[in-house]
Length: 244
Image (tube, rainbow, N blue to C red; front, side):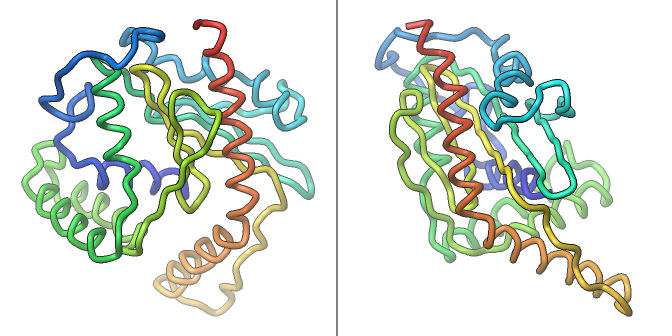
């Protein structure tokens, strides 16, 4: 669920109106022509992030990984004590490097709690008018997912030696730009989350307990998620070096 809310957050941060090139109306010459990908690259998540790459990066047998192709490519694995989550998502190819850099700058801009609240209100209004959210159920589901994000401040920091530029947010998701391609990477290998105490709780209480438990676990494991996210992002970006 954590990675789903991260994807929702991307749309909140960048606005619902961005087209496939990123920021609508962006023009200009690329800052370089070293790497220029075609649109098909946005569909190759599992070719970029292979089971073999994940297995080698986290010392897990590649044939033991479970693959899920959704909004990119994700892998999971666990044993009695540990669990592994690794994925690449939001692969986007732009007309040129300048457009990719513009989207990247906007998506990875740190925001205060006040700015996040204002963004949430704006996106909520856009959702009410959206033709894609054409039923009350769809609108309600989308807004429930937004509520999981909250209106806390979000902070990004630069990460060196990954692609042309990379930045990481508080939960360890790494945003990467390579030429005219951008994508997000997340990973975690470590202890499994302990089950929440829900005995005697009603359905509404269970939901609140689960939400609080998930948030607490995310904070506790954030250092490992950040380290693993950077590790995987460097492994992925390293594959593009041979194209230079």
